[in-house]
Amino acid sequence: MPFQLSPLSPTSTAGIPQAASDEGPERRRERTRASQLMKLLRHGDITVAVLAGLAVACWLSFAVWMPHHRGLWLWAALVHGVQALHGWLFWSFKRAGRSALAHPGTWLRHYEVVVFLSGLSWGVAPLMLLQDVRWMPLVPLVLVLLGLAAVGSHKVAAHRWTIYLWLVPLLMPVTAFMAWLGTPTTLALAPMTGAFLLACLYVAIGRHRLLMKELQTKLDNDALVRALRQQVTLVEQANREKSRFLASASHDLRQPMHALGLFTATLEKRLQGTALQPLVKNMIRSIDALEQSFTSMLDISKLDAGVIEPNLQPFPIRDLFRVLHMHCAGQAEELGLGMRFKAGGKIVMSDAHLLERVLSNLIHNAIRYTQEGGIVVVARTRAEAISIEVWDTGIGIPEDELPKVFDEFYQVDNPGRDRSRGLGMGLAIVKRLVLLMGHQLEVSSKPGKGTVFRILIKATPFDEMDNIAVAADTVPSPIDESRTLLLIDDEESIRVGMSDLLQTWGYKVLTAATIQEACTEVRRHAGVIDIVISDLRLADGEDGIDAIERVRSVYGAPLPALLITGDTSPDEVKRVHSSGHQVLFKPVRTKELYAVLRSVP
Image 1 (cartoon, rainbow, N blue to C red):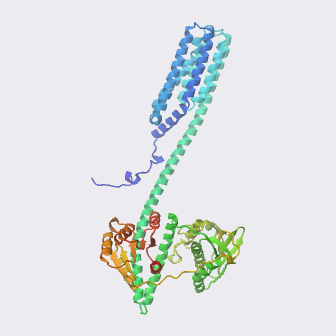
Image 2 (cartoon, rainbow, N blue to C red):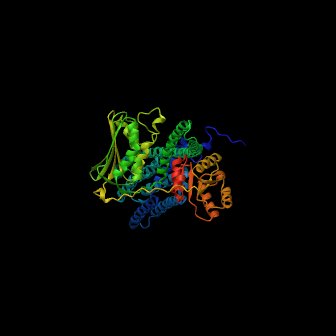
Image 3 (cartoon, rainbow, N blue to C red):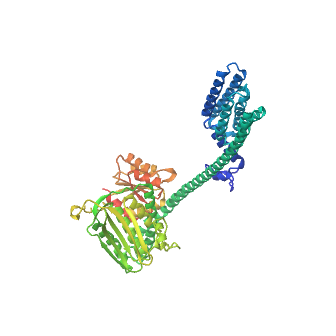
């Protein structure tokens, strides 16, 4: 049987709760009846106990004066029998639990019968208990019935028919009985009882309307909550599908980008000093631009995955400003912009590497949006904090745009999404990194005059820079040209490109496409293997982490290993970092790969 999909196909909404708009009138009536039933039987045990106690008090009082009155015991049997029926109904409902709410109409009909019989059993009490109409207990008995009517009408107000089935059998017989007797006392009480019956009906029906309005409002809110939950489920499903798509697309795009970068780096080395070298350099610039875009998205993925942990240490801001000046001043000078740094001898407690990334993003952002004037980076002392500020004389940001500047892919004054002006991810990364380090971030701006970003860092207990000893940079030893490297990747173009590049660096390269081929290469190679480089996602579901472990097992020693992956989903980012191996994300910059290989002992 062929599988078909249509706009109304249930497959498209699998696992999604039914929409509130799908709830028909009959379903809504059932939900209304179920809610009414819950209100009526909510305290059924207490109601039965109170009525039983009141009935016992009544017939005991009459038994003291009329021990041989047959009607007394008939009434006692009647009223307690109805109360037993009421108790059985409540017990059955409680035992049925949630399943009883599936058929609320049946239970409501049973309850109506019990209410009618209960009201009637109390309503005939004067007829069965009074032998002499001139006897004084008539008035107290009528007062008891009036009290039951008042209290009971409040109890049964949730259902309109139960109001009539309680009040009419309760007060109509005694009203008619007193009018029929025709004594001055009963003729005075009869219209008063009838008026009280009408008043109770009026109040109970008014309360019923309020309860129904409240109930309908609750049902409407429940419908809205269900609709909201459905929309949340749809959004979560769409987000999961988007994440899967982006992860797959990112991986598939990074593979050829990675191979292209390897081939271009090899080509640059071979064409060095020729007429084609400028062309290759332009190709490398284009590849670098793409790599920066991928790197920005990767940084967001790493931050969302929670794999970046800040290492907060006290250090002089002066050293960081020197590095930033070396990296950024040349670009500003090319554009005719001034750039000044003023550390002011401040010492901060932060992560030097992450703070450098934050300030670098802010400075490059300031350069991008400044046509004339310049940028000033300064550290100032504020109340219990050090404020590192980046001032520019750029185009500025309108006040209503300030909350949006830290959103992903948002750029001020770039509605056309000009790629030469970046992706709009820099400030999103800045926000995440500043919050990760526990600092505060402020921004203020005046359109046409400039913008200032402030990073507020809690003050350190160090007062003078001389108290801090800054570690010197270590210089890695040059690569030993006799080294051997095992490369595992299922993409032939990447194996070829990586091999050519590594060989230009002096490595002997063993290549393999699968775990089995890698193990075979290890057994076949008689010498030492210095490092293993493996792609994370191999063909036929094989995994790079497993490949490294298998190679180590065959080799018989814990070889240094490097994972390379194009998968930037948060779960995969967490997994590769928790593996303990060094990780590079495609497309890998050649200088980054070179630095990692040099650092291997």
